[in-house]
Image (tube, rainbow, N blue to C red; front, side, top):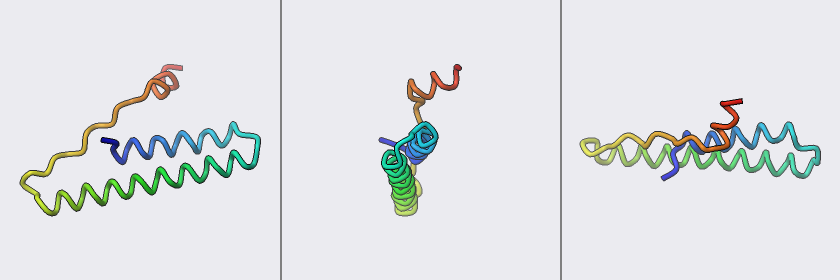
Length: 77
C-alpha cells in the first residue's frame, strides 16, 4: 500500500527532475505528474481519515514509507 508520504516523495522527484529537463514539453509533463502525485497523496489521506473516523478502535497508523534505492543513493552522495 502506497502512503501519502511516498506519493509526496514521488512528486518531489518529479519537481527536482524539472531542473534537469531542457525540453519544455518534458518539463510540462513532469509538472503534471507532480500534481497528480500530490492529488493521490491527498486522496490517500482522505481515505485513511475516513477509515479512522468510521472505526476508531481498529484504526491503524499508515505504514511507514520505505525508502527507494534511488533515494538512498542520493542521500549517500
